[in-house]
Amino acid sequence: MQLGKDVRLFRRTRELEIQIDQFLDALSESALVFKSAVDVYLKEGCSTEFNDKHLHVDKLESQADELRRNIEIQLYAQTLIPESRGDVLGLMENLDKIINLIEGVLWAFSIEKPEIPDYCHEGYRSLADMSCEAVEALVLASRAFFRNIEAVGDHNHKVMHFETEADKASTRLKRAIFDSDIKLGHKMHLRGFVENIDDIADWSEDVADRLAIYVIKRTV
Amino acid sequence: MEITILLFLTSGLFLGWALGANDAANVFGTAVGSRMVKFTTAAIICSVFVILGAVVSGAGAAHTLGKLGAINALPGSFMAALSAAVAVYTMTKAGLPVSTSQAIVGAIIGWNLFSGTPTDPKALTKIMTTWVACPILAAFFSAIIYKFIVWFIRNAKLHLLRTDAYTRIGLLVAGAFGSYSLGANNIANVMGVFVESNPFTDFSVANILTFTGGQQLFLLGAIFIGIGVFTYSKRVMLTVGNDLLPLSPIAAWVAVVSHSIVLFLFASQGLEALLASNGLPTIPLVPVSSSQAVVGAVLGIALIKGGRGIQWRVLGNIATGWVITPVIACGMCFVGLYFLQNVFDQTVFN
Image 1 (cartoon, chains in turn green, blue):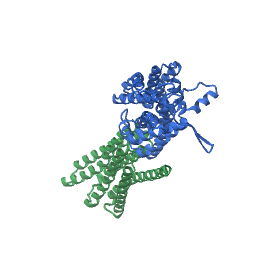
Image 2 (cartoon, rainbow over the protein chains, first blue to last red):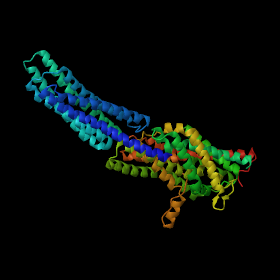
Image 3 (tube, rainbow over the protein chains, first blue to last red):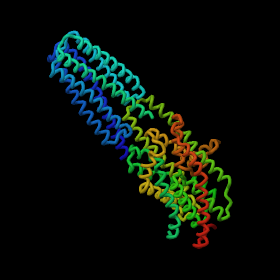
Image 4 (tube, each protein chain N blue to C red):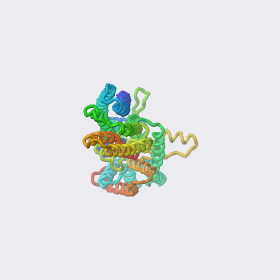
């Protein structure tokens, strides 16, 4: 009887490991699609290609939501990792918020259709790039949290680096926007987008900080 | 069996119940306390393996107690076990990590004093040295095993969930081994004093399997340990599990394994024979304290982690227990035997 339970325990464990990996894949993919969606918007505006990418992120978001819910329920229903499940739950929910932020920015592009002057294109591109890199590094840090706890610090370090770079890019971009001759309303509109994209990097850094604490808790 | 015989055995059975209620927590406390293992699963494994350990390997440590003082009248055995039980109860109330081993040795010496039987100084020294060696050895084993496990986990790079699954199974296996060792080592405390005045006789099943009187006695004691586990140990597990030092499930596994190795070493006749046949010095078969072995094991882990957060007072309490528990039990037994002999008119020694 106990042996049967143990076999089931290992099978369930393997299924959950796969689901956690799929969730992280969804986050990583949504960051990459986001980066190219911003690039497409800067070139073509709200084109079909942009809408396809937006739809893609939408699907990834729903998929990630379902995976997260399932993982959380399994962890609690089967009292798995009783010592760390609270931390894992917090991590999953915070990572999920990043996908929501990414989806939100794409919705804003799609609804508000901001007119971005040519001299700002490079700034937006670089900001989206840095935010995407921060998310990518955070995904690696999160994978390390599950499999190779000592490597979390290395990846977290990169998250911090890309967040700082994103902040610099955002400041440069805001300066360029407000130094220009466009109308104040237009400036405010553009600033909103800068802040929303920068939020992705900022939130990644916050999650990385929490992750660092979870690591300390697990090694004590 | 006469009702009086059963009556005289009750003190030993009560001691067995108390042992099950308290010491099961040393084996499964953290596992159940941290919800890694269900209480019912823990209780079933613990009871089954305690009984197996007691019946299969219980004779070695009981023999050493017999050398210290062979209580040869059932009323005498009754009083020895009763005074040990009272000493354990008193010390538990005082919040000290008490050991049935130390209580029963005190009680036997009390009987020796009362009956005028000389106490074998060699056996006494052997037993007392073992008490000191027990937590030290447990600390030594746990430090080494912990170091190895940390190294292994670092290099194996297992998934958090996989590690959790392995730890659960590890805790069950270590718990089974711990319960077996507990039964083998500590049944002597519960039933050892009744060995000389054993009311049971040998019988064999179809001339193949002989079930000795001693094994029947140990089986009865072990069943009461099991009853103690089922009826009372849950609350002890839930409080003790996180009381001493909050341990991670992996550290808890290390503590249980080290504790079990020590108890096994001091109970295994097979190991003794193996060492003796190779001309190596043997390990004395002595009932030791399960609680103190666990405290030693936890200290070993704390030391290897840099010695932070160690409550040195706990060590002081153990040393106090080495002195106070046998003294209380010895005094109680002496006085009790006097009453049993002179008021209740019972033969307490032959």
